[in-house]
Length: 95
Image (cartoon, rainbow, N blue to C red; front, side, top):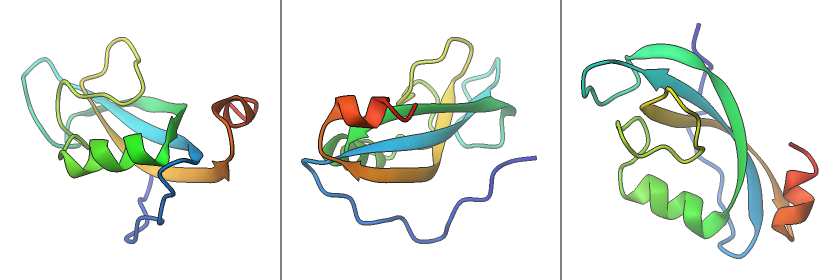
């Protein structure tokens, strides 16, 4: 079962850091979209600016543009965000 995603994405501050949970997907074909086979969930910390740029570029659920590097996945979508944190080190303490 896939993780429900809130309809409204939170407002992110560019200079702050956020711990994000991502659902990851895999398919042997170059499929785009999160209809691929669900692999699992991974968590990573990124700046608000990086997260907004990744989403604005349309990379969510797009094959070949994972935010969190996890071998064996082709697409990801953000299912939750936690923070903000003032530093990436503070964010990574919660991983």
